[in-house]
Image 1 (spheres, helix red, strand yellow):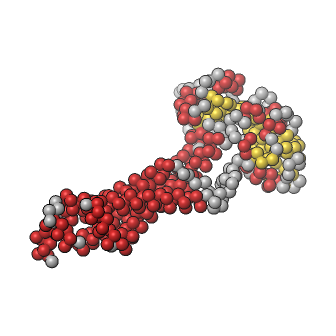
Image 2 (spheres, rainbow, N blue to C red):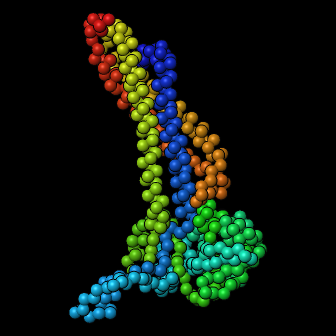
Length: 415
């Protein structure tokens, strides 16, 4: 039966070629689309996990509500009607009792490293140029174990701010906006404070323009001195031994109730929701291509069966059973599915390799290499083959069954 199936396919080369082409394009489209989308996702996740904290502990935000303030200002018998509903916040820009949280994370066996920080909204000035951003006060030896800032240094060494003394490491985008160079001095101020001079001793590029264009790192002591807030911290950045434990640790630490604890997924929930949308778009596009290819296979096999009615009658008259006829056409679908899936994977891999050499820029982020980040996850190629194979077999079943149900007498009468 396999020989007969191959012989029939070779006798209609044009039809076989276009049928195979549809299957190849379906698998090829899945590989390229998935490689691009998952590559972008891998880049984003790497940015979120390795270039930022996996868990952040910060000051708790307390929003003032009408129900909270009414008992303070009025007795239980009074029922005030507010002309303007009270609004505001009752929180601090720094963590309450930071020593408690530092001891807690230091003694937690799941914590790999942590970095106490002080974030300060600031204005950067150089000559007549002014830019808004923030400085982050850190302990460099601890911070490099939490995020891969050292790997993203393009000039200088991040550990050079280990010693205090008004030294700063700027993002590459912020440096360009200020028109500054390494070893230049810039002025930094907050609302209502005096200008303080800082010397640029290093430049980093994280690959995220939102950070590169607005952030400068200084020693934690310098940041505390700059804001007149000794021993104060606004955030503790944490890296775990196993990032999958982030959500569990957040739920555990939230019970303390005197600080805001968030995992990297919560902080970047917008990106995470986009991942689900990416998957939906990816599967919808590829499914459409494969459905079209499947209908093509179905129609072509129906035409072939009509053309091969005489041959089917001859085969049945010399002893071939209906199941044998069914197998002949299923074998054709099987061969097309395997060859088409394999060719689609191979061409997809070759084109994906070429795409990694294409320059790619995004307004919000840019890889350090400036090239497309394409995923070569083996699961992409396995799914591409399975989708092409399954679509082909489903499209082959109905025509094959109709061929096996043909009666030799009916065929002769029809002829």
